[in-house]
Image (cartoon, rainbow, N blue to C red; front, side, top):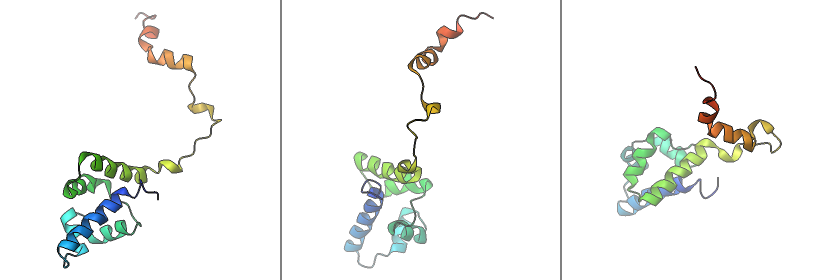
Length: 119
């Protein structure tokens, strides 16, 4: 994992650390309850063994009181891990996904192509 994909984990750790500095008795279980995540799930997330479930992402973001930029970075880092974009390999010689420019224009302007036929 790189720094971008760790952003959401770092934000969760930072918030937990802040709460524990304010109240040394504040537990991981209490924090998990505050976020609406099971405590074992939160532990695995913080240890990098599991990613945050997408169904909990928006709730966690609102509980962390993040600004717009941090909110975007938080969700992007989570989506980056969930989609595994770095693991997708595209063969540069694979012509199935390459669209010739002339075909692209025909598809983009399909109305002109379809207007030649009258029903």
